[in-house]
Amino acid sequence: MAPLKFCANVSWIFTELPDLSRRIQAAAAAGFQAVEAAWILDSNLQELQRVKESAGVELVLLNTPPGDLKAGDLGLGAVPGREAEFRRGLDQTVDFAKALNCKRIHLMAGRIPAGSSRASAAREMEAVFIQNLRYAADVLQKEEMTGLIEPINTRITDPTYFLDSPHQAAEILEKVGQPNIKLQMVSARRRTVRGGTVSSFCQKHKHARALEQNCPHKVVLLTEGSSEA
Image 1: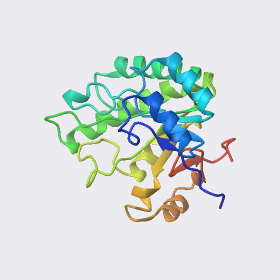
Image 2: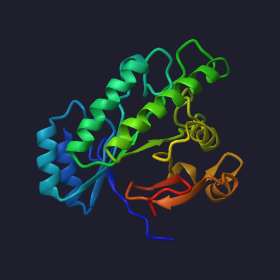
Image 3: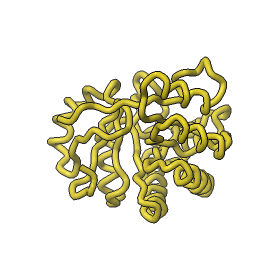
């Protein structure tokens, strides 16, 4: 197994500093060679470019916009009726990613709408997510970028997030059928997965294999035949 590569998520650490530019500088000073960020569309792109280059770090991952956080949104990829907003946000994120030479975008699924149950919303949300992921695959393929989806633990982290297990994610990826849309999992959360370990999950799902990427502390599951190795 290749050595793990770590980077700093500057949305969640170095938060004593008021902006992403200073956090990137702090990450570089702490010895990180790469950073990731959640949402950066409100930041000054030219300033981020300057700081990234001067700090000598790689930007390895950005997220699509969350929607309205104050209203309870956490991504829009699977949310019915928000398709146009998701696609606008994807286009904006791609523009930032191109300018910052970032090759991976986390396509956030979002939460089950208020007033709906997981059981009643699941079929429609999955259909919306698959449609949006196929759209994203086409957009990202033109830029030689990879889209990632990430399950979030609903028992501990977020009880209403739609994508709540790697098994659900693997089934969706099979239906999407696009080689540049893949699965990421935070190993700190996912040393075990529902029904076994990450290793047993990879063995069960023949379309996937485990691989360390430049992304921090993440196991990225890739479809067979991917050019990434």
